[in-house]
Length: 175
Image (cartoon, rainbow, N blue to C red; front, side, top):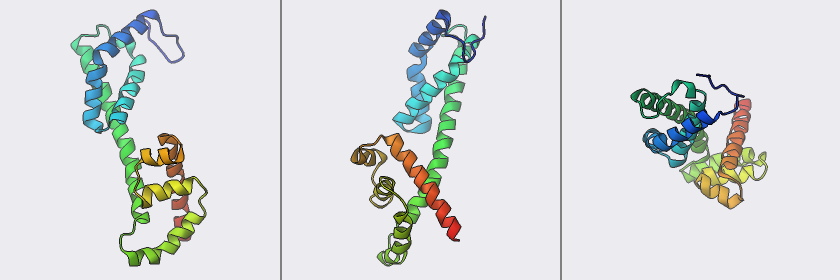
């Protein structure tokens, strides 16, 4: 059996095998991914990413309904979901740090630190400044910020990440 590699064209046999795998395993894979990630969008991403990984391994999968194939697919979706979870956990942890720095509960502390925050945000251009304010001060969801600024949610997240990285650099330079 020919091994499928990146750059090779998808053969009719491999295409049919992939279609059959999708029909049989897409929903069970989604349920596994959702159990790990607890997020619909991330679970869908995990299934897509897992199928991309499976494309390169179609030569290993003979019968769609065999226990060997089922176990392999379960292993792929679990590892893919865990990888996505870890990536998002790292992003979330660094996000929380800047969110906490921007959200000061005590009004006395706000006026004391407000100058520093305003000074930091002064160097940030629009719409990045609005994204930081909406996300950290107004505590708006990614979806709401994206809708308000007529941007995609992924664009808003990326802009926030870049701005946060730039601000962290400025804070560490001051110390």
